[in-house]
Image (cartoon, rainbow, N blue to C red; front, side):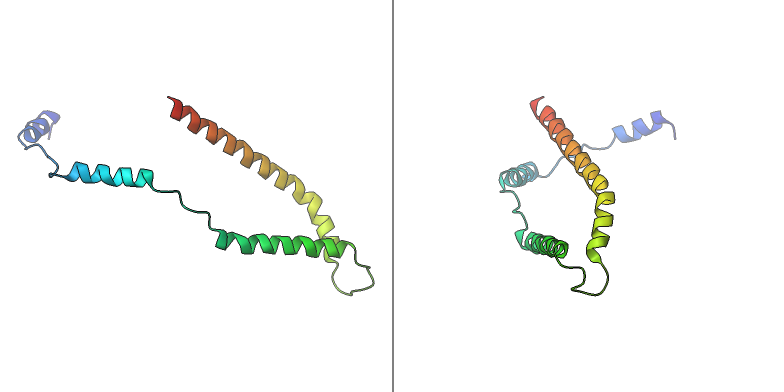
Length: 115
């Protein structure tokens, strides 16, 4: 089938018109979504993570001040002292990239809103 034949066949088709009230219903739904309040932050899920992180920080702080002969077993603080210097650079790099991408995306959105 050639493009001219397709144009001729489609020219004979009736126009498609939305049913009455469709446009109004869609616009009402759009305005209702636009004026809805934002979703709340899920504090119920965030508090256990924050409490666990705080407990880990306190536990590692107490490990620093214990006497080495008091507890026999693996030296977790020594392991922590070995891992932290290696991981610090990766964490700092990840935070820097996160901040840079967040600032970049916020500026990009502000530029689009202004035009």
